[in-house]
Length: 176
Image 1 (cartoon, rainbow, N blue to C red):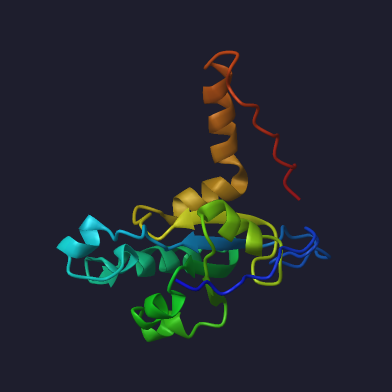
Image 2: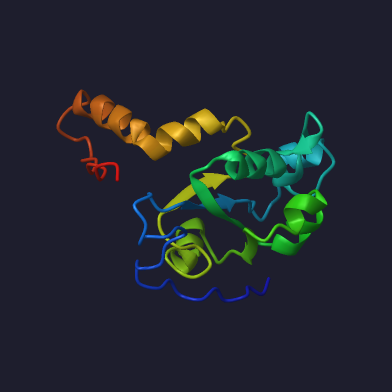
């Protein structure tokens, strides 16, 4: 499979929001929508080519995640990343497939390499949130908590009780 090169990430001075204002910058959400080379058993069972296009209550998992992100006042841009982004775009509702704040980009070899290729660039300006297309339980409340730093505080609390091998969790910046 031939991969389209993704431009290298720029310095972390690009933001999805306006840093000159007193408001916090809006987040860029990267949705990982690729799949393993051998395919996905759930996609096969649901008779779709890509796991991200499995329907749940009338909309695909990718649509559910995308609509949840779009409903959040904290998200300013969405990047859908997959091996075949045009196929996923074609499988979405037209209001999402043609939305100006959603970009569809090809992934590289591996998740980390793919994310590194776009994070902090014009495609995916800082700050960045990474989720997956099969995160169909994502809610606006989860995104609100993430934006407020609730998730980081919960992890820090859990890891502080886990013992000396726990990785340190950085302290989030004070709300602006």
